Length: 124
Image (cartoon, rainbow, N blue to C red; front, side, top):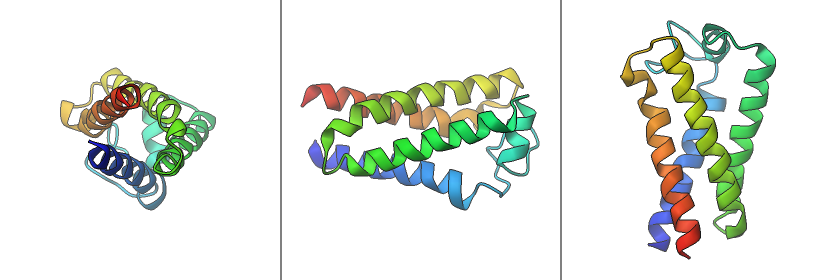
């Protein structure tokens, strides 16, 4: 179970880092509304640029904390808890603008994986 937990930590962390760094300015099929990049996506949600910056900092921080958690397990619970809350917010934003369920799928999957990591933190 420990190896599964570490694999999930790495998967979640790299997924978040990918979206918020490499794909930040790129169009994907999961962007809210018809957004072509992250800035447009947050604009579609009627959120100011400052919110995008705050969310990005929090998500990148959580991703880094998950990677650190491989060596310092005490970082896993706070990182996955906050990341889970942010994923609920992401799903809510997709629902707010009436996106298809497919666009909410990555956030829903991350939420489930964060839920597992929270569970695993208490199980050890």
